[in-house]
Length: 310
Ligand SMILES: [Zn+2]
Ligand SMILES: [Zn+2]
Image 1: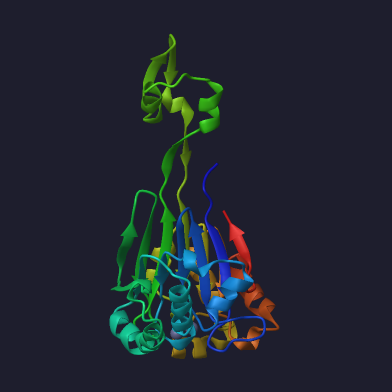
Image 2: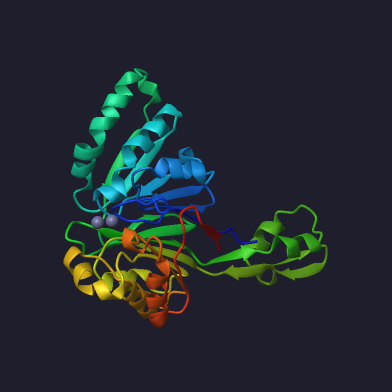
């Protein structure tokens, strides 16, 4: 069985939270990786409500430094410190993130961290500024960033699990092969002879296709967003405004429902999730949903704490 990507919507609101929708935050889990995308105020309580452990976080991706996307960081980082978070934590963000972190987040951290005078309790925070490129890559997956258009340095992110040839362990078990170093050759797709039987390794392999999730937070519609989301299984996009608020959306650098749906359509994604809804649509998310559906059929407006895996 292929490993699944798990997504949790921790906050689906925008600048002003409502009883239904907290500020933006999403969590992506894949194997040992737990990646937090944006961290609005109150995100750490959303972790608790979703029965998720913030100490499992391995990376934080920040879209931009507007308050609704980062005010949860001081409290979250304090909790990690109090709970003995181990190792280095890398926070990725757009150009200027090092200064933003130093000015907006660090003052709180030094206050809290000085209270517990145990130096060894402190974990390392590394802030990395990213632009249009792959920002992390290993054998299994890579993370890309792309610059957006929001009036301040802002990036969107994609998380892609690479296409891979994998061994069908059930098929292998059925062959009841003795322990032999030749089994290792089968895994490489070679043909070997075991107990007088010729076995073609290629018949034991299957192709696990690429999986991709794209996160487009605050931005005007732009080509980078379309290119970054190309072929994604899931696009999670902001949709602050409805179609009739096109002018306001452009003025403040946001997407309307139609803009987000156009990005999904042009990028040929499979499924679109709309978040960062203005409080005006708190009770009537269907307005946003139905408008988007006119352009792109497979669209969902998730609620806070909704989860999915694929
Ligand atoms: Zn925002
Ligand atoms: Zn913003």
